Image (cartoon, rainbow, N blue to C red):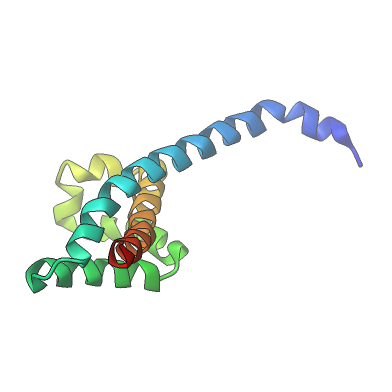
Length: 121
């Protein structure tokens, strides 16, 4: 095996590692921040709070993450309202679409974990 290829491209690998760490940390923090209110809404006795939270959790746990990423990256640009709004600054970049998809997906899974923990106590 030719290790010179790896050594020559080491700066690219380190840059990729740094981007991966950024994606994970930002998605986990923002996903957890969204998951706590969702979990509290999911255990609420009020159906006006419970139904949207359960629907969110059901959708994001029930669809593959890759599909969610494709919908955000390729789908959001289809809507003229999005392209003409401030959101387009974020959704035209793959980096921010990935963070958004990871955060929303993380929130769905974490909210369900927290909901189960709340109901057990």
